[in-house]
Length: 56
Image (tube, rainbow, N blue to C red; front, side):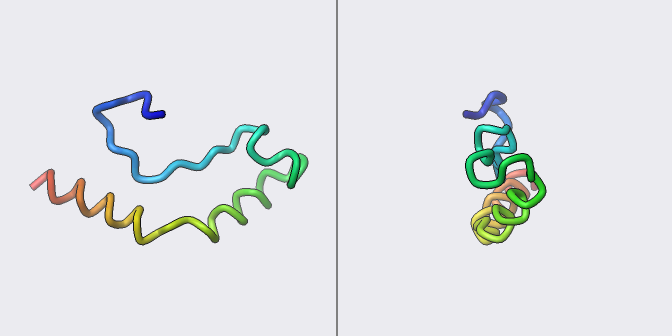
C-alpha cells in the first residue's frame, strides 16, 4: 500500500517481525540478507529510470 500516493514506489521490504519470525526468529539481519539476494534489481532500476526521465 502506498501511503503517499504522489510518491512512486521503487522498492519495498517488509521488516516487521511478522514477515520473518517463523523462518528467522529474531535474526532480522539474516532475513534482510536473504531478501536482498532475491530483489528484482532490474525492475527497481527501471522504476528509478522512469522517475528520472519524468523529472527532465
